[in-house]
Length: 404
Image 1: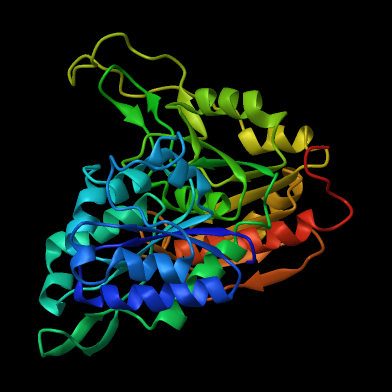
Image 2: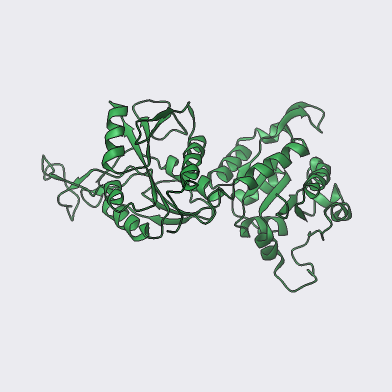
């Protein structure tokens, strides 16, 4: 961690006094700490205190003279290896979740490409407010980190969830996030996500129930681990992950072309999308009327993206998915071999508590050597972490050199 730069944002909550201890612990670990305070935060702890502890100037005003010529919010955003907001008030969370940047801190958050960690602290009733919960979910969905508050005695005199975690625990979380930035540094990861749509006419199409959640979690996790990430996505309602190059497609043919265009620069390809296997032989130029349309619609096969990738594999790592409703292991192993994959992630999508549209999954990982791992029921974000752990291990082996 030594030598890394932490931009510590302090907002106007009673727990702001703990930010001084957070800064002190970070400095003792050899990190460079740069504090940004909101105007309200200065009512709880003085900039002089934070400057003395951090050893660096404290920034409070968007328009204050930085001493050297730079655009302050940009220079702070670019300086950060991580940006931590502790405490993060409901006001700050709401502004960032809705793209409002009306002070120095929210502007720095908006401008940075570094990982951002929010540590909420507030009254329990505020924390449980559906609006605050929605804002936290929105921040998580676009790749920001959120550390859950502790349960304990609150400034209002009640006990509940909303207490700022202990500074040492916040520092441990900062270290955990920073340590995950390096394993995939310099590696280009291409992820496919979501369904494809094959049009029957201008208003109807063939598709499937894929939500894209697994692919988007993989893209976010790979980005957090330092990779350059390309996300080729079918039509989904998910917000784009921060710092990820997004290529939007609709049909399987468009996804195939996008993958092939990016393949040459790719070290790792994860095929998490669920592209259609078939498309109508012809697409009607006008809406098909019930009394005029054909009773049967002839179908033809779509391109098999991962099969073609397997033929051009080279030294890159390729990972596939098998979403099955029967004969899970047999069907997954057949795909693993035919598509020349390093490993395949198999899941039973007939279950109602995991798979399509769910935030959870229970998967099995199959390898060419007849090996198999059964992972427990977990969130898709956790599954993404497990997959990328195994990819990182493959990248560190002599068989694969990124960029070769």
